[in-house]
Image 1 (tube, rainbow over the protein chains, first blue to last red):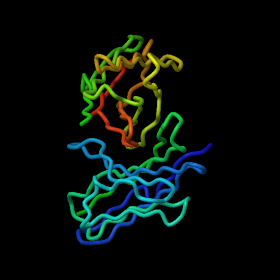
Image 2 (image 1 turned 90 degrees about the horizontal axis):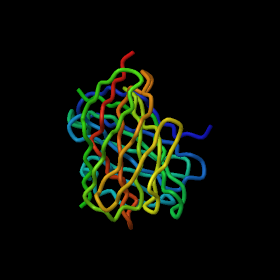
Image 3 (image 1 turned 30 degrees about the vertical axis):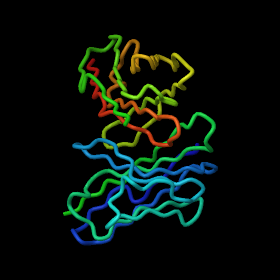
Length: 115
Length: 112
């Protein structure tokens, strides 16, 4: 049963601390997305990669957020330093090679609370 | 710029009713439209995906339609059950982009 996995599932941290969230996309999927979900803004795309190369990170605050794909099986989203307004659920999604249905498959999310 | 809206924001119905959830999008040049379900505290589960060349897709008691000319998609749930209680999100993908633009969702409660 192929699925996207994310760790940690929950994270509580103090303002100013570094936070790293990890995602393992579905094996064979070459497009990986990072989303953020809040009550006020709903679901927003932060960044996405294809074949490990960043294609668009325009939704991400660049001064504190960074996203990488060290290899095809791992995507990371890092916040440094974290702020209370970063509290949200962060989702990773993956999708197969373009040209098909472009369906995206979502992970369970990381619920981040910054105090 | 694509914008997606969903109405109603919330819906509470008795078990057994047939339901229609609405999704509107501003840019009719969409590549596909995807419907998701989200349970409280959980991730998104893909329900149906309609390509731009399709008019509808069906899966069990769910039927999703797409009318590009009017900028609308509807999700029809037949014979609703308490287990259908969740938030339903639609998302549109335009041509020449990988981005999904999400609506704000419809929170559905089906009571016994």
